[in-house]
Image 1: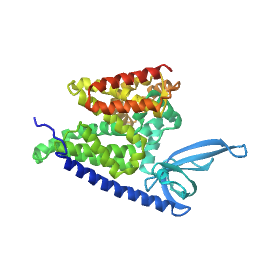
Image 2: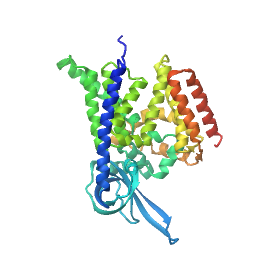
Image 3: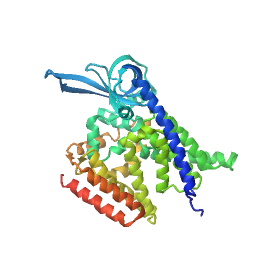
Image 4: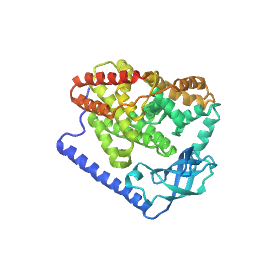
Length: 424
């Protein structure tokens, strides 16, 4: 059996790679800065974007009276996200494309790269339904419970969850399952590969036996996933996962080690060079952290059987990511530790739910999901000092080179888990 090799054979090659990425990053960054200057050059600017969130908010104004209005979050055609407000009786506009006059002249570049608020005047609403809206409407009418419909819309079309559902699933520790990312892309790509493989083999054996089946099938799967990515308007989480999939296969196809920190580092550097906005996205770094801990486990425990790895990895990732979850979201419950089991079950539930919606039985799991949601109602707020997370990260990096620190890391994570559990 041929051994996998490293991508870089010398420090010179590694330096050239970093230099090339630095050049691409500079170019990408300057494009973003130029777009920022164009947006803020005048007091107001015409902007077109898609409404991705819409909710009602009430606050007390300067006169001491209650003021009710609607908050809209939009993603513009240029890629930046922003919040604005409109009157309380504004019609539902989720997934609709609107054109507005935006007063964003005073925002900073950092706000532009993350999210910002700006006053606006809505000029035009595109009432023509997109294919994504039609699919969301079909999913909505398949369920009696609008919250259940929202869950499936999040799974299939990257529609944001309501604030209540976000809190519920964060309390259960399964928020990552509802945001389309690398996990979902992995399940979809594996499913597509298995479905296409037999058909491809029949044609290959007869017409083109000289072709590399893995390479051809990957190209087909990648094209399908790219279409899905564009259909969803390229959400950051899915864009990141798709780019990592392409990079991973590129390295694998050339016999380069995939399960290595070098591969993860290369992927992160390339992604940041191409999409500088990801640097400011907390979802990006959480995703990178998840992959980091999976690689850390597989590197140090590669002698375990595949079945053992499949069983242990979800529990390992749960405990390793718990400090991040508590520091950022601060939600915990008695059922939070079960997220490891639900993550494993979700691998079967996700493709099965797609099939059931295709054959008009999409509501089959509604009762089960309603029961699951009830478990997340009574959560506790557990505030974890960021110092604990910093120590956790330090132990994690040392653990790359010293296996002894892996066991220290496990003990540290268990200590944080017991601390959180004491609030239940």
